Image (cartoon, rainbow, N blue to C red; front, side, top):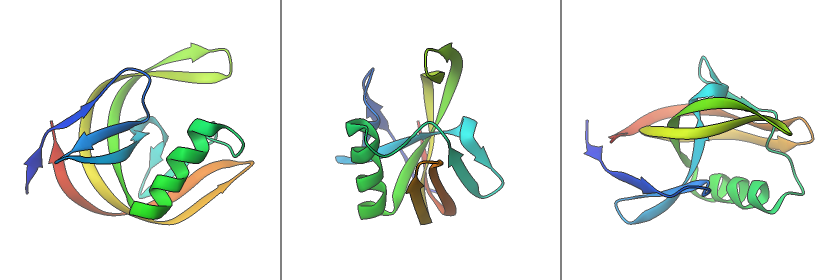
Length: 109
């Protein structure tokens, strides 16, 4: 499998892979082949930008993170990039962000 370098910066919900800006999602919210993040909700500019990119690209970067208690739930400190995935069946509403992982496209470092 192809292995690429992902580069991001503190506070961004995106990272660059092979020169392309892709949305990042937390391994913490992955169960089976599904992703379910109850903290990403409509109405937040960062959430809306993230979901628009997921809907447009149908790809995400899965990240390793250290969770910590935050004012509005769980916060995360990114510790690494795992892989780029193709996704489908994206849903985004008051219950959060949900989608299905379809295929692992690239390993990342």
